[in-house]
Length: 52
Image (cartoon, rainbow, N blue to C red; front, side, top):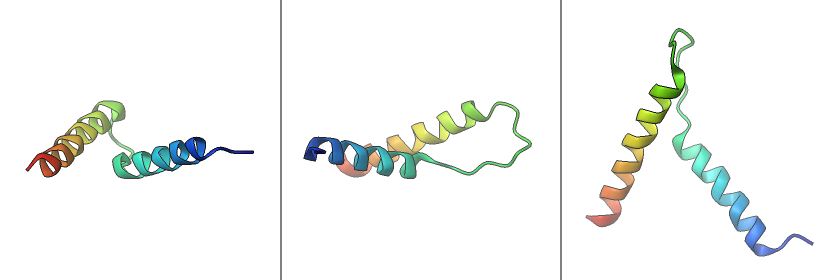
């Protein structure tokens, strides 16, 4: 039987991936760098909203 911790962890992973996924055009050479910068900016925005 699946425990509540596993369900919460799975839900957290899905919400985390949904929050940080950004569709990018196909002509970008180093997609991981752009996605990392966008994820960092989104994280800073979220932390700023939580602490303000």
